Amino acid sequence: MKKSVVLYKKLSAPLMARLHEHAEVTLIDALDPPGLAKLRDALPGAHGLLGASLRLDAALLDLAPQLEAVASVSVGVDNYDIEYLTRRGILLSNTPDVLTETTADTGFALILATARRVVELADMVRAGQWHKNIGPAHFGSDVHGKTLGIIGMGRIGEALAQRGHFGFGMPVLYHSHSPKPQVEERFGAQYRRLNDLLQQADFVCLTLPLTAETERLIGAQEFALMGPETIFINISRGKVVDEAALVEALQQRTIRAAGLDVFEREPLPHDSPLLRLNNVVATPHIGSATHETREAMAECAVDNLLAALAGQKPKNLVNPGAWMQ
Ligand code: 8YV
Image (cartoon, rainbow, N blue to C red; front, side, top):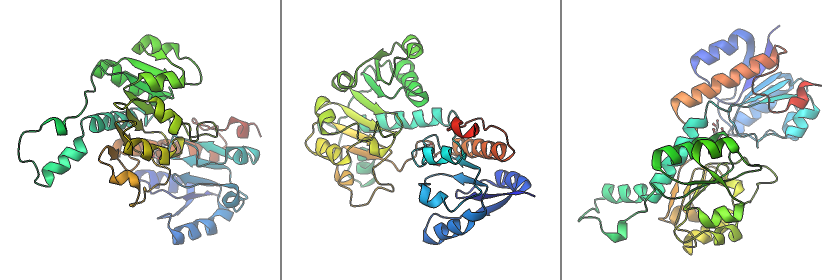
């Protein structure tokens, strides 16, 4: 008897075929009200869930008494009540590694686009407003040789450091739970306490997960420690930042500019004050959003899910305490 899997993220045809071979599949086409109603109806019979970008809390998962495994198509796991899943012995997996390089590329895309005002000036050209040679009013800031500050030295932070060091000759400062000697050796990176990094870096980049400890880590006090030429980059999670304080810092030029791929609310509301500032580059959470990487993530998630449903330990198990249940 095939087990029941509920998908709330569309997969490619090859991956769908693979899942159908091993499981009874229910696909939730969209996370709109009808889709969420269909999801709730399917949960009582579900053994496995696969998807992303949906908060799976106790209220929802109490509807799934047979649930054995949740495979997230993401590296971030802040959408999951991990203690609840572990208590129920439900295996949660994610998709690290396969998205590291692409997400670090996104980080550098934002560094360059924000420093050199690419979006603002490209829009000026498109609007037919390029009438003469660019002057100081439209100059950006250099990236090469500037100091790159990375908050959260995990896989993505390390890939960002690699790009800064080898690609742009940037001195690298980092802040993390613990010193990372391999990063210091490979990229000449130097560990800094958070406040020192904020004062010394030209680019302050957030690459850390959203946890109870990191929520609103960067607020008014932290922005005040940065300088008027500092450029702030967030490719982690919007809620690591006090977004109202960020808006204020940008409006008051406490910092020079911000390149943001994540926001407190997503999609970012059209009336967000961030969208009325020309010193903001805002992208719609595209960190891992390439054809190649999203397919690799989905394949990783399918591998994790099928392993779990077959009684094997998934490669990317987030909550090992559930495995020992
Ligand atoms: C997207 C991400 O949320 O992996 C993460 O944690 O933030 C992004 O990759 C994810 O890819 C959505 O499917």
